[in-house]
Image (tube, rainbow, N blue to C red; front, side):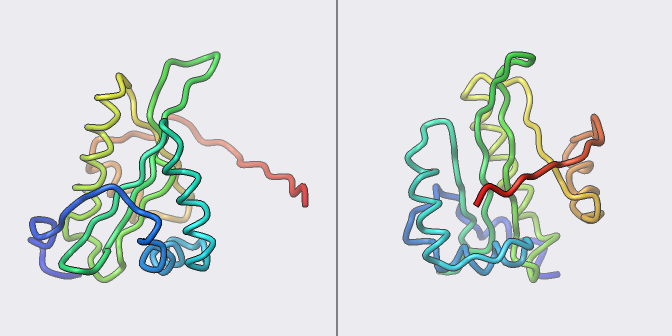
Length: 151
């Protein structure tokens, strides 16, 4: 773990396509390997969507984390914001960067008139679960995730 005051030295800003080379290694740390070109392509589409936000944490000239959130509304529930991904450089975890990014997502969600922020976390990520609990998140259900490959 790094300096606990690192979050105070971080600037949080909206992501840009040109951040892709710095975001790709962080995505790999999250367990989702991707090339900078893949990240840039995805980011281009996401940033064009008005109901989505990607924020980065920058310390000096280095990107040290990112969060992606999106508005969601279903027939059965009111509009909410869903965190689709959050990763902090493993060397800086525990230094307040994740808390700062999540705080910005929560502010954005309030601006979008959301009463709730939701997220999903793999069952094996016990450190992440403890982090979210410290932020006031509670487990509301356990479910299976299904996938069908179409290509």
